[in-house]
Image (cartoon, rainbow, N blue to C red; front, side, top):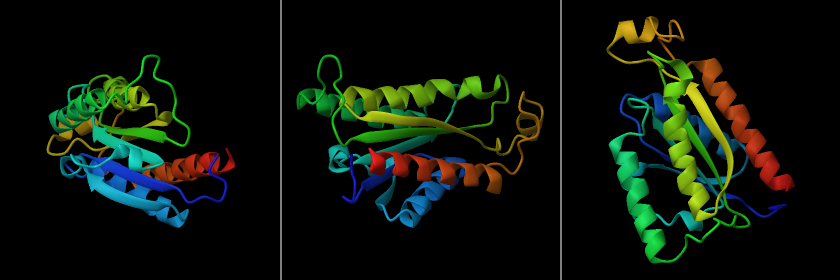
Length: 186
């Protein structure tokens, strides 16, 4: 339980077209509203970042062919190697007190809908679980498939042009508030 103790948060993301970046910036903005000390950082700039220096870490990426993009995979593999070498990863993956994570994924689902986004979000979540962070959520946000109108209009989700929109981002902001409240209340 954090009680009145300040929460220190990190929002990590990788974005090619801006969809995931919009979600990451919404998360960071809501954290500020909730009076959480937060840092927003692109994954490609976070190689030396100590994740254990934070109480709450958000990690987000788009779904690319139902996988996490290569820069995210490289980041996770490098961090896994580092934490294995430091013996931070324990058998049974015991949950560390005061360490929480949320993964988020943007997707267009031009072929099979949300099923395309579940694997990358689970992959990122397993990374945190191995480190001992308690996973507080896997969030999925629809985003336009840029430069391919057919993939933004003919998939199982229908017309996703212009997304994530204000309603999508408001849902993300409400989810951030719920996570912060839960952490503070224990």
